[in-house]
Length: 69
Ligand code: SF4
Image (cartoon, rainbow, N blue to C red):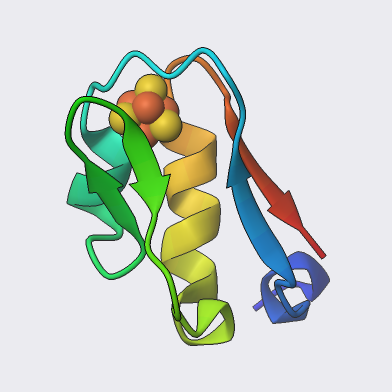
């Protein structure tokens, strides 16, 4: 586990430009919901899904998932 993986996540934001591909929901269904737009679910314990959230951000084809630490 590297340092980045250990850091706490304060917020997850989806910037404009999402193409609703569904990859983030596939990777972290506990955190992301993709319908006509992509949303971050409310009341999510981000720290419980750190690895999945970072993976989703990395895999987003248009790089609009921003992880705030
Ligand atoms: S992975 Fe990126 S482009 Fe795809 S639905 Fe999620 S935020 Fe949108």
